[in-house]
Image 1 (tube, rainbow, N blue to C red):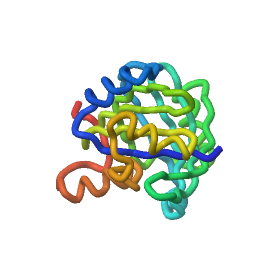
Image 2 (image 1 turned 135 degrees about the horizontal axis):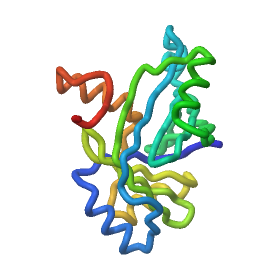
Image 3 (image 1 turned 90 degrees about the horizontal axis):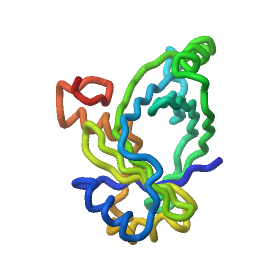
Image 4 (image 1 turned 90 degrees about the vertical axis):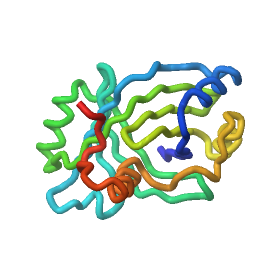
Length: 182
């Protein structure tokens, strides 16, 4: 499947949450911690070719995801995505290790998931700030952003990994992992 999304940084999530309520969106999950572990080969083969292999845990669900290189149409990011549930976080990690992949980075966010018709809207609180991710049919993303009071041109081109790397350059002393303080 091809994933198409806008990732828009915001000064806080309350305004977008209120707007989602106003336009009749459906809250699918309340805010909860999501832990993501990225895997790669020892020589960084996946990262060097802009691919991602991830194990994501939220609640009692574990998902293994592969993402291909991204390309953009205006502010909209598109990339191939293959995703499936795993029986457990431990089994997912064991499988990837057996295939020669090792964890190289962890990132966390507190995510709240909404739907508005065919469009998915995620409100993400991260250690570097807040973001609204709008995912769905490419021709509906910019319209949905505007309905929520957001400007599509404010969308950022990076992934959380690349955004964290840039954030760390401005904040020396932060570790490789994008995690909340214990």
